[in-house]
Image (cartoon, rainbow over all chains, first blue to last red):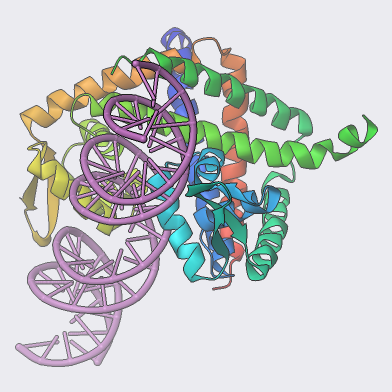
Length: 156
Length: 156
DNA sequence: CCCTTATCATTAGGGTGCTATCTATATGAC
DNA sequence: GTCATATAGATAGCACCCTAATGATAAGGG
């Protein structure tokens, strides 16, 4: 009993990481399955949603918003372009950059994605209190900040 | 002010998903960077840790424990075998199956991984109370169960 | 003006995840 | 014993994410 209590703080930490990892993967898989029904993937859907909120971003800005690297975005956009969901447009005054614009079809799909996302959120979080959600959000943010601070330490 | 409060429940849900996704990715990236220092990746490290806890599992058992599909594990093991971290051993009485065993080097690396994982957990979760951790764990588990129930609904 | 440096996008290549499909072996019904 | 079915592992092909290096254009210092 005593040992259990003494060890429990370390256990709680390990368990927290485990359960966070698991629930995150499940969430990802669920969203992915839902958007697949309309011919998309999670990453592509995420990209379209960001574009709906702020159209005409450059690729660098979009990669930053999506928290992925630029080369990853390039191929994501290649796929979205093939599906006629987005267009790469030249930028006035900077021939290096390209603005990413939703096509009409892209905009329609983005609206559908928003609907699906809202639906899934309600299904998944239906019977959690707002207090629980807010408390967890605070925990997430705190950990996020701690990790950012950690990363700054890395010498190489 | 009023609108903010009225919308806050839906906002809290969206924010919860967003922050969960973000912190999960950051955690993944951090672990990955740390184990990379000893020539590993997060997935390989996870695999070695499971093998340390229960050596001599078959690939199917291991895939199940890691919550990945068998083909994914096959390639993971191919890589681990090339690094001389594991061995595929024949199983008495079933020529289809193979037991996965850690090499001496694999065991040493697994111990190092355990050390690193503990270190990272403490760094990241240092100033969160056990109550916060436990509350979040409960939230994660609840959502996990809800998602499992959802998946059962899917007709296709 | 010219040359160095910085920035935007791309390509190349490795690692991880999935589904669908294959081969080899084991098991059970007849 | 033989054939159908199930199971273990491997293979192929697609999607996504990363780092490193490249090419083109911009911007700034001499």
